[in-house]
Amino acid sequence: MWQLVSSIYLGWALGANDASNVFGTAVASRMLRFWTAAVLAAVFILLGAVLGGAAGMETYRDLSKTTLNTAFIVGLMSAFTVTVMTWKQLPVSTSQAVVGALIAVGVWHGDVQLGILGKVVICWVGTPIGAMILALVLYMLVGWGLNALHLNMFRYDQVVRWGLVVAGCYGAYALGANNVANVTGAFVGEGMLGVQGACLIGGLSIALGVLTYSRGVMLTVGKGLVKLDAFSALVVILSEGLTVHIYAMVGVPVSTSQAVVGGVLGIGIVKGVRTVNKKVLVNILLAWLSTPVIAFGITYVGCLVAGRFGWL
Image (cartoon, rainbow, N blue to C red; front, side):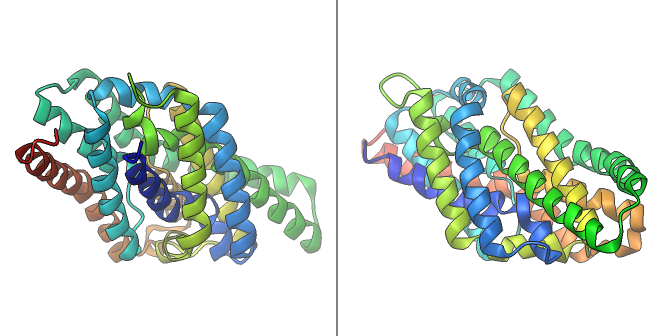
């Protein structure tokens, strides 16, 4: 099944762009070394993919019918879109790239499930908003809890550091469970991969992307949008993990990047909107809007070219 090459490439691109977000704020706040964060993220992403990735696979399978060859095009064009954004060090939505590509295939075949698409789009909108609200709530609750412990500076630093590790591992698990469908969901179907095989292959390829090419976007999210201290970083990771895990259980793959940015904006509201780097925010929003459009366009062109040569 040579067509899986594009899926593995997409998983690598997702890991390089999206998966880094679970520890980006911790690394930017210098509470964790990059390599410590990357290894932990890779391990827990794989666990999340294998143990909790099945629901999202079913959503993508029902959104648009695919064959091995169209699944190859979906993976290749989605990965190319995400790779370009990663090169620009912009945290984009791999979910949006994949859905844009799947819609293009559906248009090519004349079969797009609009009801499922509407559900996915609503969840996209709710992801950054939900994470922002959770960050506002958690900032108060976690802050109250730490203050109630009456810790000295040394103990406070230790508690927050371990909190970042635990929250990051949870966020990585949630990301693996939610986003593995982006990588291999198009290959789940008759005559292609089974759900568990797709989860394993997708999880491994995402982990590879984290370990090899995630540093640039990690610093953009953790440092470029709002300057974060260690406590704020902890809140952002918790809000991201909870948001993405909820959608994983619902069975809708969403963007970890959008959840993290929503959480960071929540911290920006607490600290005052003047702390938000508006130029970085605008660039991120433009990347989000353009991602599904670009993926749709190049995938549809790919289908046209492949169809002309009798490949589809």
